[in-house]
Length: 298
Image (cartoon, rainbow, N blue to C red; front, side, top):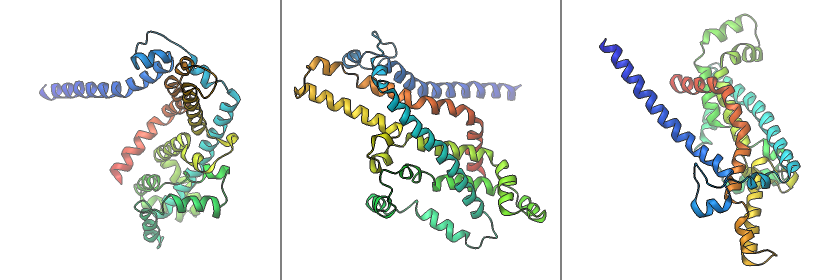
């Protein structure tokens, strides 16, 4: 009876803590949603609120003013996310599989090479020169695709999960005459679906949220990914508001204040996070299992 009461008390405490944490995580997102449909003047006067007194969809009207440009940016980002995630998973899985094989005599040297890059790097200037002058990737689709395709952190997660597999499984495959590729794709990879889902989500999020590489290497507007396109849009509106306020262009201060800037940021946040939020429940089960398993068994 005492043990049963202790379990009930622990469950009540656990659910209470988890509920409070969930609220702390959900309330900021709710503020973003309400801020996106709040009138700009209301936010300037009273700040953000969960229950705004005056609603407006002007931020969404401004955000969707160029639907074809947004669709083009969406297309670039979606293609980068799909292609980059597929290629990244392929490269990370193959690399992790090789580095955990004890019969690969160079595995420690290669592992040191990978881990060394997490401590030291050449810096931004050599990296920029490599991408633009050596590889010639200025205004090139590959400049957005290649930098995020491989990460040592993802390699560590994948390697830890593969190391937890029984060695006898690999030995049995070799005895049955399986090649290394067949062993990887037909035996190992079906058993590491949680790790694949975890690493895949990390890679997809990196591609979906990337704007930095576009800022460095892309000058053509038709090649802007979604995040950088919206970043440029916000900067353009803020610059226009400053010109209006200073009287450098036709207009008045009132129209400058009424331009949606704060609400536009909230609306654009909803526009860019919607698809990736909807994708998360599809891999949530594998994601949690992959993180916990790689952390415990690694």
